[in-house]
Amino acid sequence: MDHTTAPHPSPGGVHTIEWIDFGESKCEAPYFRSSTFARQQIRWRAEKRFLAYCGDGTGLGSWLRGLAAAVAAAILSERALTIGDARSCTLASAGAVPEYLPRYFRAKGWSSSRPFRTKADRARDVLVTLERRKLRTYNRAFVHGVYVGNASVQLRAGYRRGPDRIFGDSPPLVARFARILGWPEFRADWWAALHSCAYSYSLTPTHKMLLLEREFYGRHNITFDTETGIPRFKVLHAWLDEGGAAGARNGSTRSPSAFARDPAGALACFDRLDGDGKPTLLSDSPWATRCAAAAGVATTDGVASATAPLEKPLLDWWLMVRAENISALQNRSSPLLETAWLRGGREGAYPTAFWEPCGAGVGRAVECPRVVL
Image (cartoon, rainbow, N blue to C red):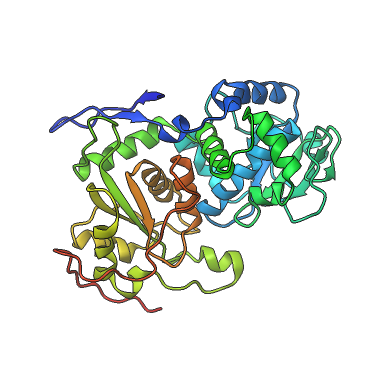
């Protein structure tokens, strides 16, 4: 099992945090674990064959959904993956995530940062959008069926342009990708395994993120399993979409969260969530955060929305990766929760969700002003 030692908590009642990257540990693809992926990324970068990931979503979860697709496309087209920002994504929007991400996460053993390229270099780039198409050829000259020759690529992907758009219903492409990853035969769980490996080797927490994690543990007196090292807290995710990310993405009004309808009843769902660690509510809603804190539930501070700085949503995502169990308080999981589930190398493709409040939880009666839905 791979270990990385994280900073110690502040003195006081103090224990050592030994960070165990369970997502990486459950990545069983020899292509990643043997460092072949990192070595090839370094080589393709030296060859100046780039694939810049230009996320087309408005929120962090959407951007993360597209990242796994970008990793797969870079491998299949033999190009160095870079996190596209406003300077490198000249043919598509880069979104806000690349501006903040390097402070909190980095690639493992290779660099995904924007390389130095002249304006003339960028002018030769080819834009490829992940969309449903019959021909999905991938090699050094084709990306998603589009002939690009030796040009670098700006890949537009996101919430509705995930790896399913790459592989579609093409068993030969899936089989080819499985051979690259070093699997001797097709795996039923290849979809979840792809995400776990892609996120684990593209998103390793920086010292800054580990300090934020440590501060959360100290503030809420989170303890650790003595055998596994897993921090003992469990998470319910209440996505009220107060930042308007879902509406901006698809123009629809999202069904209200169970927390918005009945805060005390929603918090009672902790009693049905496996694990005996500290109940923790993570939400994009300051209102939901205040309500949960008043009920003695652990929370993170700040405002998470489509337009606010991303420190809180990035911390929330990482805490969901690290938690002993996670679930949703809405009628479907958010992309943020889904990608955290996969980054953590958990069993199954997606986490369960509590669509309705769970009743009156013991000791969790809380009065909160209702939101206007």
